[in-house]
Image 1 (cartoon, rainbow, N blue to C red):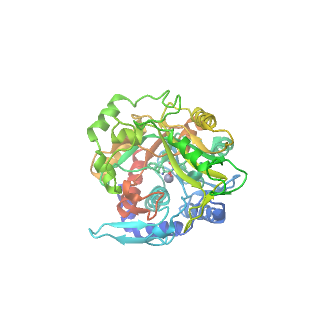
Image 2: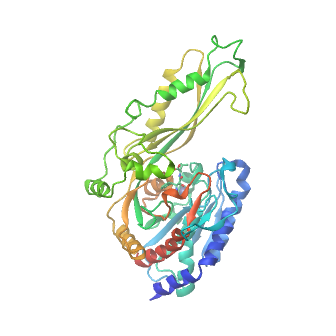
Image 3: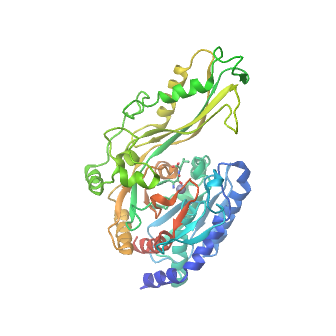
Length: 460
Ligand code: BES
Ligand code: ZN
């Protein structure tokens, strides 16, 4: 009965929920770029005030990096257990290339498509402001209609997720007692498709490396010196090209050591849903799988590790032409890891390979950009089953247990540091363009996402 009232309230209050989402999207909380540090802090303040307006005891907690937001529900609850810790992040990715955005990234809008469906536009609309607010807005409706929450809730929001979570480990260590709860709920993942809800049970980890190859002690004229002087772009690209063999596998020694497939019932279920390369790649203008030969689409994005190049810089790439032989060249390389791989070993193997491949007169400089292991969570815990039933109720279709190709480092920290399991529920879609220009969040993701959390909280 009380759930029904909360669900009606969510429907009636959707415009106001949307207005609140627009407010936080307007704050450009780009965590990786120091130029936006004040905006990141402003977003943290907004998030804390928003939670306080529901009745949470909310605080902004400084760290050596961007602040965390912690908010406890200290009002009445229906049941004392479980005490859940909800996690989301209020920071966003950079917006470049800006010229490809159809509307300004931090001026959100509600757009109606030709088929009548609606979407919310803006950086962070899906990843993760819209997603984290689905939970907060569900709490708001439950409190407004019942005066209480179904279970005890603490909300924990990070402002550094998109930049490798540098302050996270120390923060969790220092606030262990306050943040260790019975269960973590994480809203930073996606649905299977626009009408099929999902719980994510595997995440890939990440090792980020930046390597700079230095050769001459200055830029040189490529006519005067070309041929005789070593070119760092040639050195770098040859090294990068050596990281994959013809079957698409990564060549680093020991790269695949320790990997095991998920349990058979899970892989069988994934085989049954299937996903052809055309279905997955068609919408982004591609047709053929580029990863390890002999591996299915779902394996390539969920259960197999990768080595990818995310950026490469060297010499002159501006308008016109410059006959320069540069002094250095740089690449940003990332490895997506699956359970069983050790991030430290992968980083060491990469550095050893690069160093061994250097010709005389070339020198490599490395910079670390975060590392987190791949994870496989329990596929059959009681809380997962409850969340699954609640999602199935809301969407009128069985919720699937899926994997995710992306990384959410905190889930590993929760387990290792706080001994806490996570249930990952999210409402993002493959075409949300997260991390790209024209990011959007479907209005149905937001609306039914809020309704889903109200049901999940009531079911726990
Ligand atoms: N929400 C994403 C992770 C994600 C993407 C989960 C797609 C499920 C499907 C998250 O915010 C993210 O992008 N994380 C970064 C982490 C990195 C910077 C350490 C990532 O995966 O690149
Ligand atoms: Zn995210």
